[in-house]
Image (cartoon, rainbow, N blue to C red; front, top):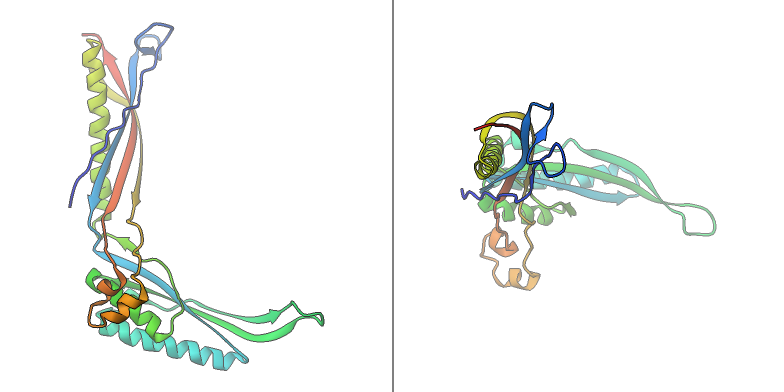
Length: 243
């Protein structure tokens, strides 16, 4: 895990009147408000895959039969790659009639559109490309970008918050030292946190994939996990005391 802390240069110093150095709210209180920021970079250790299979057939039964066959084929492949039952969800199902309204004689029935969604948690990122390739091989026709995650996300977010708080206090201390006053206790504190995952993997061209069938799925798709970024910001108001 690599740690990166960025520090905001924005500092707000409130003033009670023009030319004054500090805010007096109430009149006998002096304070300084600063912003702090902290970031943590972490390597993901799992990915969430969301996919679906869509089929249009003249009758509902044949459409459902085809969709269920594709789902069963993929689940067999996913389990062979190491997916456990608790990491697989196939609850999503949608059935609707499809019509063509472009003709002059009213709508034309096209068939029944059956969609079934799947979600798979991949805990071995070395195999994520294999999970994706097996999906298309089985007949799954909609696959979203993998959502990379870390099992230690809460710990990393707390670390980012701690860095943001330290950053805010360090800035307040610099101001207090520069203005020859003492830094007091924090009076108010507002915090926000967020995380950003790497850009989704970009598959290699099909010609290269065909030229190296022995390569694993990650190599064929050009998949690289990258790093997750956990960030936090705080806005803190500190009391300023006379020396």
